[in-house]
Image (cartoon, rainbow, N blue to C red; front, side, top):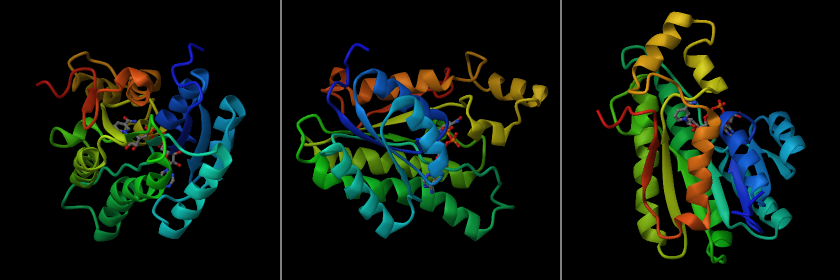
Length: 247
Ligand code: NAD
């Protein structure tokens, strides 16, 4: 530990898997105390067994529960000065195939869930000198989709929501965005199975560096934006995408 987040009190959604879990590991290593939120409470507990922290089961689309759980998290941590919204879902359907229920659910979890948790955490964030939010969008917020229009649209909206609140909340709360390319997590496994060798090769080939990212590489960027090293950075979308969005 080098103490880049020493004394910080950070809430993570989607903390039970993939990028959220890896961010929890890196935050804990750097001295933060954590509130770990996931709709899969048992999965968040597995993260907590490794990182320490307070565990909360929550579906981020449940408006009333979000308020209650964020308040309980603030109480457990003694305030909130960092928020990572990593909870998200993927859908792969084309515009011909997706039904309105599935479209609404993707927007609800990825966009409305991010909004609800940000809004609920604001009263605590505003009290803190180092307050920072990091929201996870996607490389597909920046370029037309690999995985279907609903997911890409939800992530583009997460990005612009975040940039907009960065402006509204400055200078009290910094707000930044990470736009990952395909990353080795259960979500990517859902899109292209790990044993689908041809599918994985084709996915990697979308990226200039011809590879997928590891969750550690995404979490390193999240840690940077959450830390004091990024004290002059707000409203920025950082692509960590093995070179997709430059071409
Ligand atoms: P993941 O599926 O491994 O983890 C997502 C976590 O979010 C899970 O633990 C899940 O239970 C939780 N979650 C889902 N819906 C929820 C809800 N309604 N309420 C509370 N928790 C909920 O996925 P990941 O790869 O770690 O993705 C993390 C974020 O990064 C997501 O927002 C995703 O869209 C984004 N992202 C991922 C990739 C990738 O290639 N893996 C690329 C770009 C962006």
